[in-house]
Image (cartoon, helix red, strand yellow):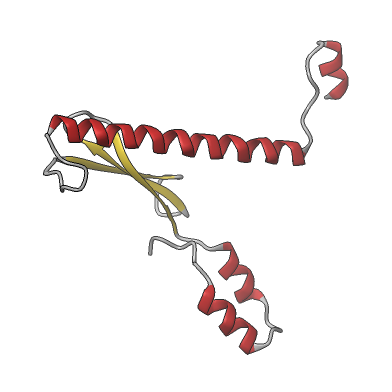
Length: 130
């Protein structure tokens, strides 16, 4: 792959570590941009409905969700709240049926019970959907 890229005078393939680093930066930037746009959408809805900053706005929303795969086999999904007036996304939530940390520790047979109970008490589980 490196020889093909050098022949075509384009940058070579990226190392896994570099790819993961860039992917994390892109993910963080995308989340920040999404939050800014949702904040602006909420501000626009408040202006349309003449609501103060701390008042509850009586608005209509629609909720839509999707899973990563069709059927009942997907472990990850997302739910979006959209304003009926503007059609803009005002909030979202990522849903998960799986927690890697719980799965890893449940497979560990030889661990002190006290350590496990201490970890379990402080663990914030990634499972957000039953």
